[in-house]
Image 1: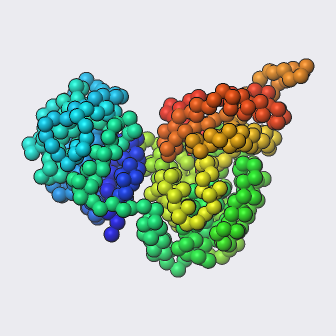
Image 2 (image 1 turned 90 degrees about the vertical axis):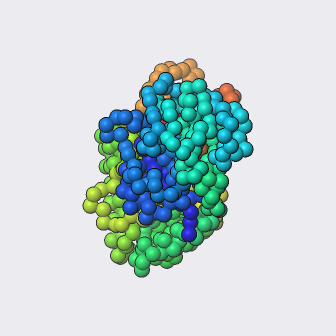
Image 3 (image 1 turned 180 degrees about the vertical axis):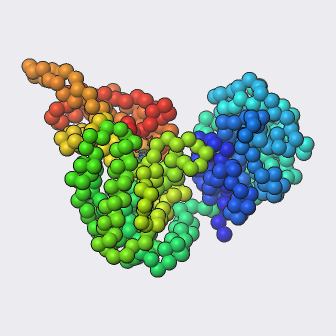
Length: 509
Ligand code: XMP
């Protein structure tokens, strides 16, 4: 049986990152709201539990609480930040409001030796983000690490296998964060590890077969990596009972529709239906400028088109979608804030006639790429940059119109070509053009121009949850800008977006 670590989410934006790190260390991890029922938590047979951070204070009335039975369950536990304060408070220690610490801090070891900190140096830089702090330890606990701002930076009770750290071991700014998590999983909890994409396929294929029974499925190919990999794994499970429907909504990048069709007729021999629905989508977006409204309308029409195709194909029971873990989390219903209703989750119509099959629901983007390679998809497809379901429609501020789409598509092609030619694509998460809907005055030759501005967006990221703008050499920016202005009629100005996420998002809408 697969070893499973549960991350109990107290409302942290970092819960996903904790789960990812655990998986990187070779153990399958899943996020569960901290308020889940004790019985439901135990039914998942967790091999270890990690309590996430969260925005609350243990003294605030209504602050999230765990079932006391969990602490007595014998399952090894690691509390992080609020998770630590919660454990200290619940087990009889004292938590007080201290001086808040945000950002880098230094922790030092005490003279206690413990498996959690085995192999770690005397001093380490860690990343803190807390208001309250633990002032006195519950009985049975030893102080393992201390800092100036948090006298108790790490504590542990080896007997009960309950541990806690005040800082965030999951973020890259914490030195030896991965070592602490590894020690917790392997030395404290005694896990065996070995979870990887091969074992994901072995587990997921029979699960899909059991869920679908002798039913049939339709996969929504969007042109992106996610739906392609979802199609490939469901095809492995169901073979001919899967039909791939590729809806061209008209918001794809240049050459994309052809590329998808080729990959799926040559490499993965699916029943492939190509629906050309450009006109319907443009019509559905007439006069719409609100980004969420664009996403909702596209999502709704997308599903309608599938329903129509399904009817033509005969009885279909399941709709496969390439929904990823970050999409699920950012759209709720967990504790983290709703940031965007990603079209393949939040925008689903209520009268949906299919059951949803989402084989990638538990995976992060880099895991999906690994899975795609594991399933034999072409590298060109698997390594492609992420592309949002609503496509170019949400990279164009204001109303979606044919001529603006055409202009954006050409500008985007130039950005892709120049970035790839410069050899920097491998370091990036996404690189594309945006039409901000701004016209400015310029001069070309002897003529005054009044043209569109194009924004170039290029970001580095591990998973799309946070991102930084790409620090291109000026010559690269120069080449991109010149090429756009000279090759794309109607554009006379190019801007480079230097906003990170947060505070921005990667997409403009
Ligand atoms: P944001 O703009 O929220 O995007 O920083 C994070 C990542 O998600 C992609 N994205 C989407 N993917 N459907 C998708 O499949 C969507 O509706 C959607 N919206 C954003 C975005 O390209 C980035 O990689």
